[in-house]
Image 1 (spheres, rainbow, N blue to C red):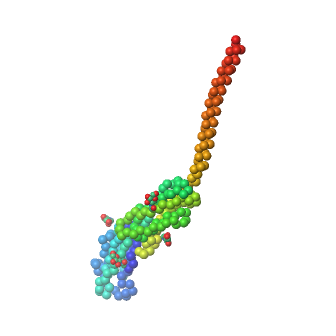
Image 2: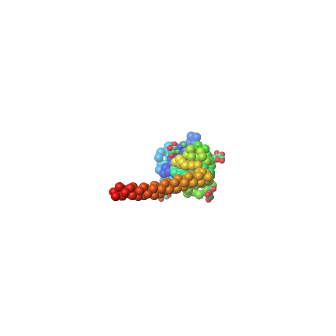
Image 3: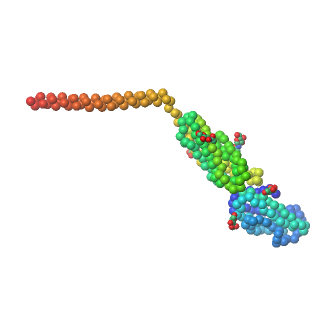
Length: 240
Ligand SMILES: *[C@@H]1O[C@H](CO)[C@@H](O)[C@H](O)[C@H]1NC(C)=O
Ligand SMILES: *[C@@H]1O[C@H](CO)[C@@H](O)[C@H](O)[C@H]1NC(C)=O
Ligand SMILES: *[C@@H]1O[C@H](CO)[C@@H](O)[C@H](O)[C@H]1NC(C)=O
Ligand SMILES: *[C@@H]1O[C@H](CO)[C@@H](O)[C@H](O)[C@H]1NC(C)=O
Ligand SMILES: *[C@@H]1O[C@H](CO)[C@@H](O)[C@H](O)[C@H]1NC(C)=O
């Protein structure tokens, strides 16, 4: 029997077909025929050659045993149940979010509470192009946080694409599908750094303009005073 994936969810439906193809009728014992598990189980339906159970409260990998009697012989089938935690949340951060052309920035992607990590691939994307992907190797049973960090150099066109991170949990070897998760897009602001000599020219021009402005104000003030004194002198002459 192939292992069977479930959603790390409260419920999994198991259909057990005992003695397939056998035309014989067989004795039905109330025990031990049926399902042996520490999990919560409920008999949903049954027929002459099968029983269907609802197994719930699955929180970690487990083995479920099915006992059945075939031609008066008791037999056993086991089923490995693999629990997975889908990448519900995929988070992406660009540090810094504003960078000069040629400057470096860090792309960090993380997925909390995911399992099994061996089935996970994290891919960093610029627009639709995959920049980097990473797989993981761990034998931990509990769900964990998976992260990928990458340093990059800012190109002019980086500002025109969004960055994102994709998580693929490939459960095909466990009899499941590929589960995808993707982050919100993040934008990088890329600016042209100002060349040094251009900066010097700008500072010089600004300084000269500032100097001329201050000088003209001073001259205005001095000439203004001078002119007022001459006007007053002229009145005094007229009055006399
Ligand atoms: C579910 O499992 C937990 C332990 O994993 C147990 O404490 C709890 O009683 C179980 N709930 C039910 C309804 O069986
Ligand atoms: C089930 O898991 C056990 C170990 O946990 C392993 O030895 C066995 O081969 C597995 N069975 C199947 C059918 O994959
Ligand atoms: C990861 O990258 C390699 C090449 O670097 C590529 O062959 C592979 O298909 C990529 N995997 C995924 C899941 O994108
Ligand atoms: C990225 O660069 C920083 C320093 O700028 C360094 O500390 C860090 O280890 C680098 N990370 C990677 C994944 O190369
Ligand atoms: C980047 O993402 C924003 C939303 O965050 C979207 O409005 C914008 O169109 C996207 N730009 C590109 C080039 O995909």
